[in-house]
Structures are given as C-alpha cells and as structure tokens.
Image: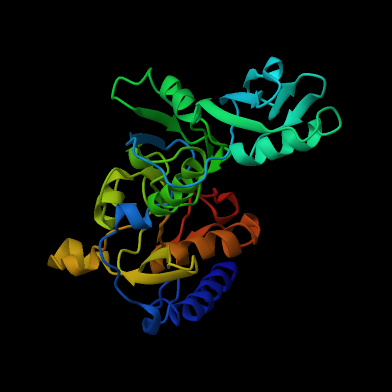
Length: 343
C-alpha cells in the first residue's frame, strides 16, 4: 500500500511537471531579440579599476595671441617709473601671492600682467602720488616645465603611464585626479584635454589603453567552472563555455540566456541555441560577447525534474514512510523499512 501511494504521488507530480518540460527555464520574447555588431573597443569599452593608461604629450611652442594669466611659479619684474628703489623681481608663490615692500602679500594669481600693475598702483596711492607701475614677465608658463620634469622618467618619451585605482580615479601630472571608471577612452580624453589646456597652451595629448583589467564577462549555471573571466579580445559564447570547462551533463544547451546592456545601460537579452552550433555548425548562434555580459546556462528539464523530486519528495516526505525516489523508480536496499537515502 505504501509503495502504491509513493508511485501514485510521483506520477501525479510528474504529470504536473511534464506540462512545462518543453519550456525553457528562462523565458524571453522573440520581439526583443536582436543582433549587435562586433564590439568597438575605443567607443564601447568602459574603463575600470586595474586598467592601465598611457598619456602621451605633444607640446608645440608657437606664438599665442591670447592674454596671459599669471600662474604659480611665474617670475615677474615689478618696476616703479619714479621710484626705482621699489623695483622688485618676484616669484608667484604657491598661495598665489607676491610680496611687495611696505604692503606685504598681494594676490596675483589669475590676473594679467596689466591687471596686476593697476592693482599695485592702487595699493601705493596712499604712499606715492600717481604711481606708475609696469609688470614684465621674466619666466612664465612654468606649468610646462613642471610637466616635463614629471614625465622625464618615462622610457617611452614624453608620456606617463598610470593605472586606474580601485576607486575609479586616475592620477596624471599637473592636473587634478580624474574619474575614469565607467568612461570610454574618447570621453576621458575630452576631460583630460580640457584640464590640460586650462594649464598649458599649445599642448595636445594622446590617450592609449595599455592593459585591460575590467573587460570582464560572467558565466553561471550548468558549466564546470562558473565564474567571471577576463577577455583580451573578441570572445564568443562557445569560447567562454570552453574556458569555463564545458557544459555539465545537466545543462540545457538550447536555451542559453545572454544578458547585455544597450547604449543607455538598460539590460536586454537573447536566447541562444548552442545545440545548433555544436551539432549543426550554425555559427550564427555563437554571438560575440561584450564587456560585462552575463551568460546563464540553465538546467535541462530532466535535471529540473530530479531537483524537484529531491526537494519536494525525498527531502520533505520521511524515508520511513515512502523511501527515496528518483525518476528511475524507487531505490530499495532490503526490506522497505530499511530503505537508505540517496547520497
């Protein structure tokens, strides 16, 4: 009687499951399946921690018609037309000041030489009658000198190699730290160009990605080694599965889900039939993966059925009542009351 009860229970559960055995574990409508072209490294790859960048500097000295604004370390000469004893050769200090006799610190950073001359004249009107002051630049555009010193250690010429830190920022000489994580090379180059041109005239840069450490794809589910994998170039689903040790026996190869992101970072997916690739040679199914793609290999229908029986029959109904069961039938080891559980 107990044996009949067990068989009847299993048959009922199997009948319920078989109604969905032909359906994939993951569902996706065909109207959102579309192909993407091969990835473009420069415009699509998102920089991340561990990536190594090289910035190459190109400086071309040439006449500049723009007004010059005083910067830190500039050396200038301040001359009084009628009081030559007040003449001074001064260096703009890191706090942006110059020190004038009888007046002390005078803020000069960001002023043109002419503006600084007018400012000094106003300061000294309380001492001299109608003072006339001339400011002459002796050494200026010193930022380029600091930059040259910072990159002289490079064996590749006027360049600097910098890794992206775990916080996503990268450090380059002269300018402030820049957030590089999540940006493409053109986006980062635009930011760096703006910052450097604000510091140094006639300077252009070339940005090169030396090492990729954030070009990751992920695979999970019924493969031998589910994990994240660093891809050095173009990698297809079949190649990723091979790196993951191949399919498990429980894998459903015809409904593999690939989750990607579009240009607006919205998730989208497609189902891939790897059975057509492996058994028919239909390479159109073996799509190229992009950075941060997620590949999910689901369980087959029979594997899901066995898991269901394990969880809802063998693990929930006491063995001394109906004994362990699997799709092949009951497992007996002597009398019914001495049935051993499946290891």
